[in-house]
Length: 289
Picture (cartoon, one colour):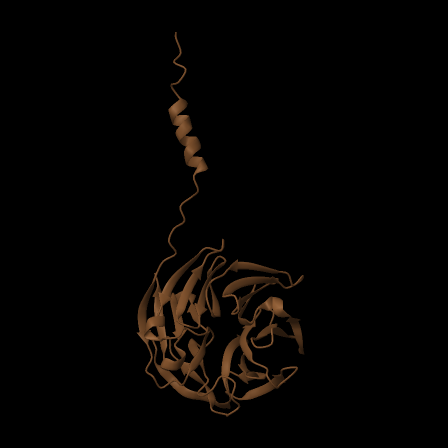
């Protein structure tokens, strides 16, 4: 029997070509507006979800971002956008980033970190920046073991509160004006470098820095979307989705309307991304689809 030599060449070639072509990345999704609060908030800079009580904490600057005026306060807002307690805690200066561990809400307040009891709303303890004058403590993140990390955007520093010890954990121009911080697992700290508009990963053990994505203007909030994917906000009014491989997609752009996007929060179980609008004095929530 005569064998036809090219019978399987074309199918085989097709399989080779298919294997050689890169896999098409699925689009990450989109944001659909779900609700917004009224405008009784006052320069809301940061929002944080408390999964123990089911409420959102909102840090209101109510004035200049570095002024020691005692006008700042923390609000409580429900997951459907109702302001439940506008001035749950008051007498702060310009509160910004927040993190929570057990029954303590950690809040930055210009030159200090404050621990607030979530049951009473009372401040329990404070930690001051090494150099109070000119300090600009900004974002907060708390690791699973309770270690607190705080960024100083003005002075290229990251503070750490671990086992009761408050210290400058990392500093230097290589941080490129850190704003957003997010503890990931045991050994990684994500930071948003506002000088370069970058999302970067710091190895906690070696302090080596790797850039994940850049060109996102004034990076502010960083929250996990899942499986090493993140939402990253640009204070000017953009929100990006950054994939584990560094690919990014702009999901929101409100710059032409002069609506800022400050320190965001993502409530995974509700698929809600919450955006503090800063000067517009409200929160806007988007459904992640």
